[in-house]
Amino acid sequence: MRVRFYAVAAAAAASVVAGPAAAVARAASGAVEDTECRTSVQGSEGVAICFNPDPDLDHVQLHIECAQWWDPDVDGPQVPVGPAETVTLSDRCWEEISSVWVTRLPDGSGS
Image 1 (cartoon, rainbow, N blue to C red):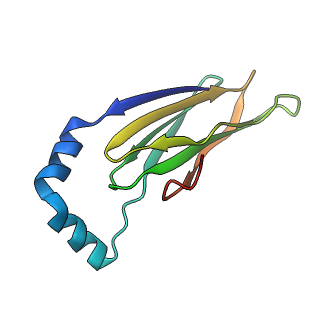
Image 2 (image 1 turned 30 degrees about the vertical axis):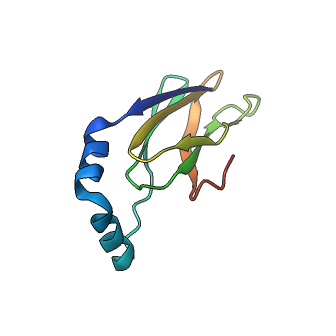
């Protein structure tokens, strides 16, 4: 499994400018911003790009269901996604992919 990390400077700068008052207001309103992932299939490779807008650490895990019965399905490792961080997860089947999805474990409880 390949994992790439990208720091998102603009989002980090925005969270610094907003400061703790914004975090307190968001917590008081009960709004929780979950890590968002977008998945795609490129041939026999499944890709997920995940961004964590929350100030807390999250963990994401890529899952791929292969179309052929003899092709082993993929459950990748749980990968940490820090605040204002983007990660790219990818893995592959030998042949066609039936479906790709990502599961999330909040609060750093996954590793």
